[in-house]
Length: 113
Image 1 (cartoon, rainbow, N blue to C red):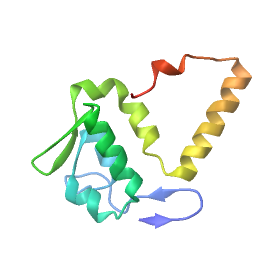
Image 2: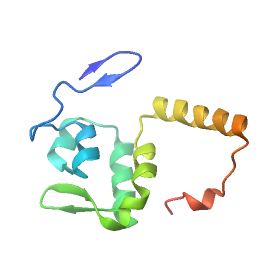
Image 3: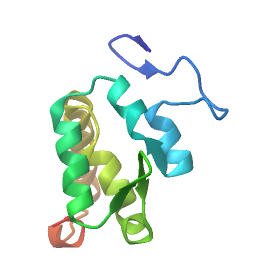
Image 4: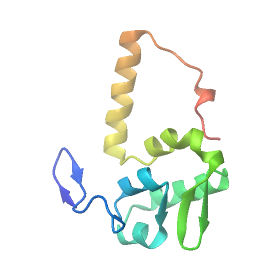
């Protein structure tokens, strides 16, 4: 992956050999070995364990797969998995947009617990 201060771009995207996290978004499953090769921070593994305990994903045959019960929570899960710096920017942007539009919601509607 090529990294700079703005984006992280996968070297190879598409095809069956695509092992980027973006591939999960298209196939809704990913090889555990591909996840391990990316040397992610431990918090990502903790999130996967949390999602599995909540019945949103399953591990089977060396893969992590989003199951039907997890599909309504998919966007929330992807936001939870954002790198901390990007998540902070997402949260700030969302907060500012909510303030400008006067949008409010009940937090319990989107909580994963």
